[in-house]
Image (cartoon, rainbow, N blue to C red; front, side):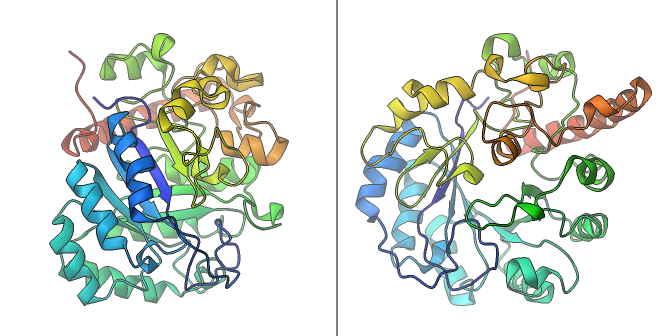
Length: 371
């Protein structure tokens, strides 16, 4: 069973060779940034993160593979004992690079590529046509690389999401959803609404288990989760065996300048401290932000007294960007608009999906059966 803060999303650079219109990390400005060195990252991020129980690290950017020392970072993370991920735009994944990566970490790697739609609209948000990413996927298959697809959800792709997820399923690939937020751009109108979440996104997401169960509202009864996981959520607050619903409290992120946030989509806005000035232990276990946000008793409004508070928690990111308050009830949650029969039907679908996810998590060694 994994402990708290088991997953780190590490933006190690803001440099990128793409200029995606709505880039989350603001890496589309054509500015050359100076990266923190491998030695400093090892001392302040990698070693303390593993000591505190983090077991999966996802290297991102910008474009992580633009760092000249990416081989050293991968080698160090691998030797420390992390399971490793790379979030990439795919442009640097040449055969030569893949051979080098394979030599460094073997099969201890999952590469995440982004696809927001399987039509021409993908280029507007991802800066490439879908065919480009599909060619990269074929190359990765040649090297037997494990792959995950990241899908950003916003009102721009609500009409195509069913087809997108169906196509990903037909590729036999896992996926995770990322809510679009205006972290580095003034495009609030592209965030999904409660109506679009209920009508378009949630009915499709609940069908699939072969990706992170990281969508909300996640209508899994607490008693079902506790029976399967062995956790007492009243005592432990955050589901980690396996993680479901909002991953805040099990997940954390660090931006290129060292600011530590409960979620990647908060980066540059919400920080518990800077890891190059304050120890990671103090930030995660002593800062006011992390102590408060990892206790679901501090959630406000409907999210604070919902039957799914501990298995869902509401999306803290959507709460923040809609209200300015990370603890507010999730304004995109449509639970209050459902009748009892509708809730029961979604619960049954969620339980079915969760049990399949549990089996996947077991084989992926991120879940330990309750005794």
